[in-house]
Image (cartoon, rainbow, N blue to C red; front, side, top):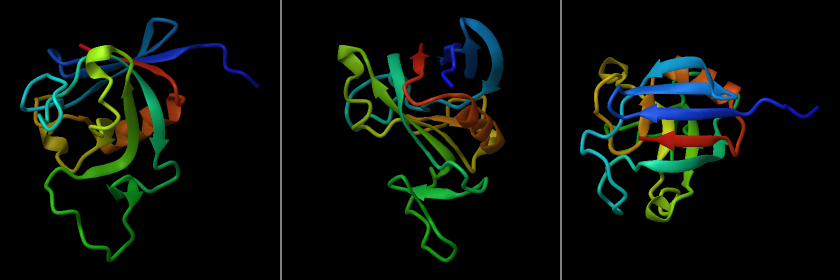
Length: 153
């Protein structure tokens, strides 16, 4: 069965909010955390890119909330934690840039993902990705398809 409604994601850096739209009508809104280093597309800048994207890959379906990923692979109980405070948790929506200036987004590993820093959601605190509360990213993950359009502005 083919879904006829088109869902899209809009991230407002100014408002630190992600809005899920269906046929341009907002159906969900979540607080997020974008980069504490500002906006930009430079390799290694740890800035949140802006422009048009799509969800290139969804990773983590069926994993328990709070699952930690390293290099997009779920860690098992007893695995050592990644050497970072910026853990990628619960779900990953891996973004691909559709504009010339953000075409390197996939290679920069820019995701929408869960975090252990839920207390910082609503303020710029990430290292380039769009962080969400774990329960929120799981809900969003289940509502969007790979290929869904994303705008970050």
